[in-house]
Image (cartoon, rainbow, N blue to C red; front, side, top):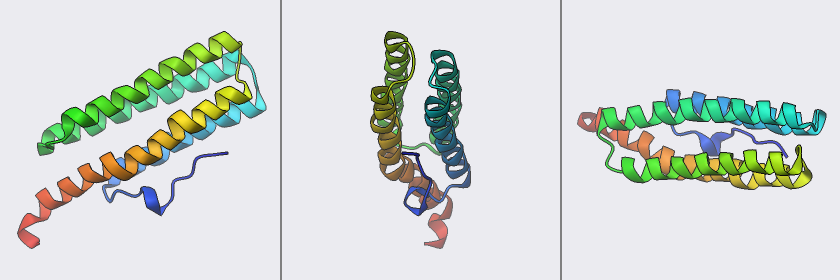
Length: 140
């Protein structure tokens, strides 16, 4: 099952939304690699690409939150840390199982894709709404 960026994931902030599309693409690249190659090296490489882009994205989101004075930044950062730990666990799972297994793919879908969907729809949308209200308060 591949991840999909649809209207329910739109936050209204162009930077955040474009990065979420890219992040979902990286998740799908990992899943596709597991299906097509099913070897440890390819899966680790794709998981590393996902982890690197996730770090970039989290950094950009956190800079934005600092810039706009977002009051929920500490909780948001803690949620980002949850996904970092999940990715570490996935690396360990790949090593232990010597490659991507159906269980690994299931964990990616459950602990990365589902986590991301929930995070976008709640935490990231809240940041985008706060930014919009802050930037457009005089028009409301």
